[in-house]
Length: 251
Image (cartoon, rainbow, N blue to C red; front, side):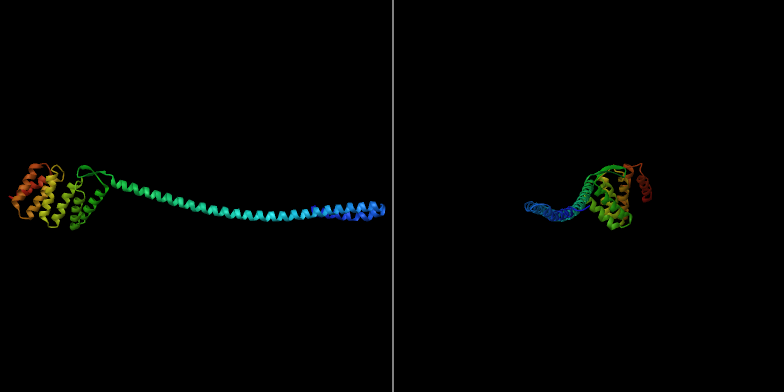
């Protein structure tokens, strides 16, 4: 289909051919009028062409501006997406940090909260740190590292003087000192257990250990007295049975 500009050109050509025909058929006045009319039509046609050209130029310019705007919007959208992705990563990092901080706080709270411990037939409340340090010292004793075990048990008593682990710690400390040849120190540790915790399940064993240290020191008289006290105070225990045998051999 012809464009508007082509139609206007066709109309213009038709209008230009009109005066020649009109001159042959009409008078001069009529011819002048016809020429004027044709010129007016020609001017109108030219104006239409100019308008079409201007509109076409404007349309091209508008399309170019629209294309530039679209590209700009695409660039802005890409930038916003990038910012959103960065924000999402930051939010994820903050959430992870918050979770780690919360877990760390919960762990610290758990370490500060006492828990029920069952040891040597007794139940008591103790901090997780107490239990951990007690087990470290006991592991050194099991490994026959008696100097390290002695130091660990002594350090425990200094750090936790009122701990529920104290009776057991005193018992194992005396054993570590005995193994290190420190018999007097061993007697002191075991007597602290006997005097401070007379009903503790480890007390009869501690009395027997005191007698053993006294025998090592050649203090037979004191050893016999300790064994007699053990049999009298705890007659039904395994330690008392061992004490009776020792007494028989000491006589």
